Length: 608
Image (cartoon, rainbow, N blue to C red):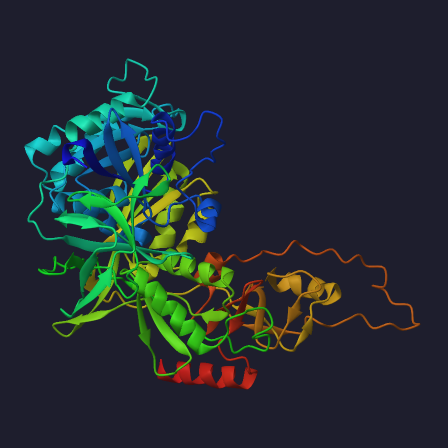
């Protein structure tokens, strides 16, 4: 394809600012779908988890043709935990479309992706989305974007970037706020005018970096990347240059391009094109596909270091193996290695015990998504609470810091600030946003955010919005208190009984209703006091022929508070684990035997 008839763009923004929705309408208006074809909303969010959570997790490719020009579009995640996907996506494109919510303005992920784009020297254009919101303030938001560009060291050319105002869910865009938009034509025209075509080939010999991996049941491993130099043909022999410099040979069995949501067979592709290759099995992200006669490696991909870690362990509880298909340490290790192989933002390390593995990632949401994906595939495991990765500099222990943004009602400012104080959060900025809302900016240790999201939603009555980004390293800030409540722990194996739960619910909130199988050491609720409480949840009412005062007492149970995976990971303490199976999510003590728990607690207090 003539490179002048090609554009490669990435649509980047903070989570929930409307990237995937606007890509939907770009596909519709470019004629990708038939007039009578039924198309789901957020069609790019193809994964089950993405649809359930309403967020993009994996960067995905699509392509549209407008006025004879093929536009390759990469829809990227907006959540900071999946920043590794964004960093890789930016290597495939020649420009970015920065999407900003007209009410919320630039947020942490906006700064992150814009900083990465500027670091790669990519041109940008700004789309102020959701201008139909009641609290929209597009002019002020545009000023905030310019301030962010200046803060990131943008040059004058970038400060003169085009600005489009859009209503993404209606597929409308305009260059002038006083003139309502009808279609996305202004956006398409701005892309053609301001995003340059791919640069000319840097040489005759093939060079292409492996940027992403996929799998197909019929053709096997799929390699996604952008050709930097030369051309690639179907059935051609190529070299694969690995991280250690080792060169191996492979054959391009299938060569695909992108057209709408489909991949299409092509015979040949040249520099600047984003393609998919099948036929080369043993390949890693960052490897270079090069010509057979002149193999020269491209600089390898580097993504920001992960900051949080969890221990994934084989399920050793009494119910192990009853619900899952893959339960052994070999199954668990192979699956985690495959995940790290596909995602450079994840690292998997062996521990001292053969049935436990340390998984390091960007944040608790990213690690929770991995666990949720594994349980849906049939895996059983237990997971510890997330802890930060530390390092040593000049004899000091350094820990990762986060910049936390909280958009809250004015009435909740005091409550949020009070809750962040014990977590070592320092307020560094406070700005009014209008409509009775404030934006608070804190600097806080990464470990201080573990378990804070639920507390934040409670104190803001569900009206608060919080987001955060990695913000460097600082010396260890000292101890941060964990949750103030203890656990209600089952002291024997059996089934929960309504009669027993009725008397226990006064002591705290329950996680289960009647008729649920439990075992010794399993946590069935949250105690009102800091200490743990061991209870018999299988106790039944004694049947006698004697009349008793409480004989006719109604048993009325408060509905249980069901723990999702994310809530469970946030809630557990250091001596607790989350047990995950394809059918259940349980919380348990690390030591199931009460005598072992007592000894461990005694040793902990002595060492403290």
